[in-house]
Length: 490
Image (cartoon, rainbow, N blue to C red):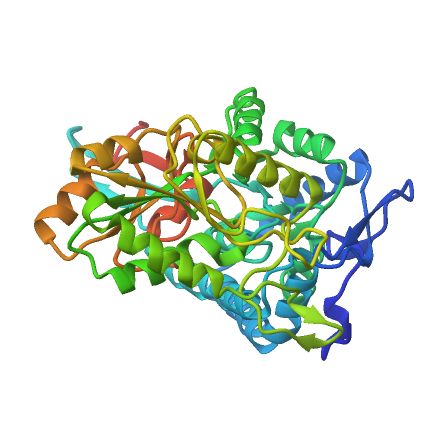
């Protein structure tokens, strides 16, 4: 693979403004999930090197927090501009290591860059307040203070956007960061570090480390100088992060799993509902915590929806994002690894055994490897794994409902509470549905709902806190109260 900016493809970690190897020589191989070809090796740092990254971030915090908002904002905006200038290279790196179609990767880079100027500007509104005093002769107020060093633990399905959505808020607030990306997709994170260096971040402000996952997580989360931990990943690991952070009473933000319901009411525009359902389910090969896993359709339009939905899914093009340097026109890429492929096959087999009807797909794709056919299963029931579990795969389960109360009960029948979708043209149905769904984000008659101005996050086992929007600062700032007596001390 050739790049216009060859320095973007880095195979070293970034600590305290330096590109570093593992002291012990340990490394991990990174393969393209589309063809299993080796992309490269990245160092797996030893524990003292992870601690050194925290050391660097801690030292840098003392001066970075004192930088003016304009000075921090100038560097952040330069970082975003460099990302957009090198969007094509970044997208190709992303598609190589993650497998998603190149058009989706380009979209992710633009999405990732959008958070940076947003938070650079929104930091101007990290206002404290004057409090009317109940104490004679005293002035009361609050100020917002950066928490300090932040550990950012990011996943493989959105390896660029999940970094900037966290880091932009932390850095704009005056914090310093240590990023630990997924070892499956490290090169996107390291490319962002290269551009951060070019943008002018001082040494130690932005660090990217890789190491044994359990060791690295424990080292970062248990270091008393790390005052905030932001994690995106599975609910299982999120609980471990929360437990570890509790030992030192840190701020924690968790964006975890999802099992999104998609409710199609009888009055919905079926053509639109099908289009939205396809996009909401099959983007990123279904490997998205917001993917529409359980599609619930009012019984009177259930047969018509199934027919149209199945026809649309049959038209999806499956394949690698790139062959050599040449882009392929595909809609669905491979699954990330063999474990994901195996559990997908097991979930489909379980559903078929329990009475689901296979309308499309349901088998390994003819391309072989980690490619799985886009799949539609009808008549899904609550005893099936694809109903109960988060399905990080291109498999859609569809089921009928008779009343809105029944649809709401099914939609809320999950430990997760991240995203939900509604298709209807009746406002008297839509707004009560929005309020009664135990999901933190609800999209109506469309698939696009995320972005820099909105508070992204979940309820229940889908997480704690929000990313993006003004709420995105909450994990990275503390409210400090003061009482200033005109005479004497508080």
